[in-house]
Amino acid sequence: MAWNPGIPAEFHIGRTVCATADAATYGNDSRDATAHLQGLIDNCPAGQVGLSAGGNLPMSDTLRLDRAITLRGAGPG
Image 1 (tube, rainbow, N blue to C red):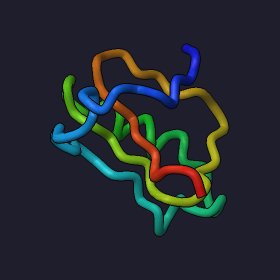
Image 2 (cartoon, helix red, strand yellow):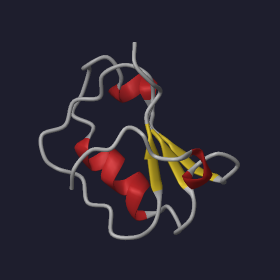
Image 3 (cartoon, rainbow, N blue to C red):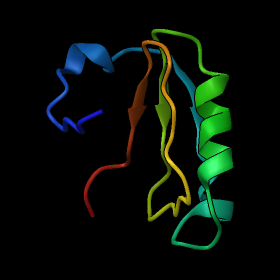
C-alpha cells in the first residue's frame, strides 16, 4: 500500500483512540516494535485510531491493516 501522508482529517480527528504504542519500551530504536504494533492494530476496532509513540520504532517486518482503522504517528521530528 502506498503511504499517503495527506489523509483527510475526517479519517482520524475526533475518533476513539484504541491503543497507543509503548514508547518507553519500543521508542528511540530500543527494541523491535513489529509484534507490539501488529498486536495494537489487530485489537483496534474498525473506525478507531491506533497511535504510534514518538521517536523511532524499529520494525523487522511489514504491518498488516485489514480493516478501516487509522494508524497515526506522532508527526515529523
